[in-house]
Length: 222
Image 1 (spheres, rainbow, N blue to C red):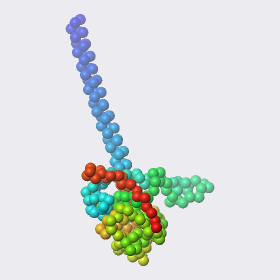
Image 2 (image 1 turned 180 degrees about the vertical axis):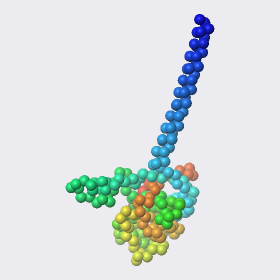
Image 3 (image 1 turned 90 degrees about the vertical axis):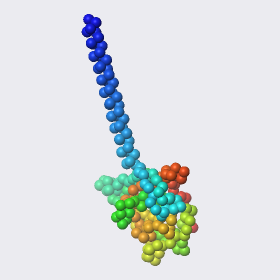
Image 4 (image 1 turned 120 degrees about the horizontal axis):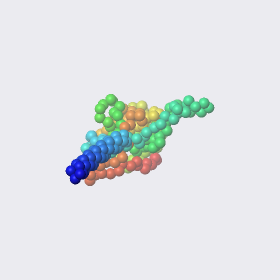
């Protein structure tokens, strides 16, 4: 009887150890799965971007790392859906922006209009339907001078003609670099489609001693 009891205890101990190992393996697998889901979710909302060049100085410097919000301008095509509802007259191109539309002063990362591989980072200066003009080193929006506190140099027109005035098309924004004399931007390639914007820059985090939030400036039109 003693022999049988000992065998039973050993089997019970082995079974308990096996159960603990299975439980530990499951816990590890569950943790890894949750980490993967969290990683995919985060990557769907934010991305890292490395500043390449000096076109956004003095605000952003070459080599700085940014966190970019990919869902800042997420839109829902309500117009297309509502156009199917009888009795409702709505522009089928109308979109709802639950987190807000692009604003003047937002720093955005977008796909290059020339089909290149490396995204650009610039600042939104003018919105759809606005008239942009550059006179005597200053930007004018709808005939009023735009006060830009982050600039260190006057603005030049840099390549565009059209009597030095540009009307931003619907669904587009006019972007410029803060380093106006060393930036390839909408003065060269025109306004960019909002759909080409990858995301809005939130903050810089590298180098750590220069980390800062990237807010939208309070503008004045004179």
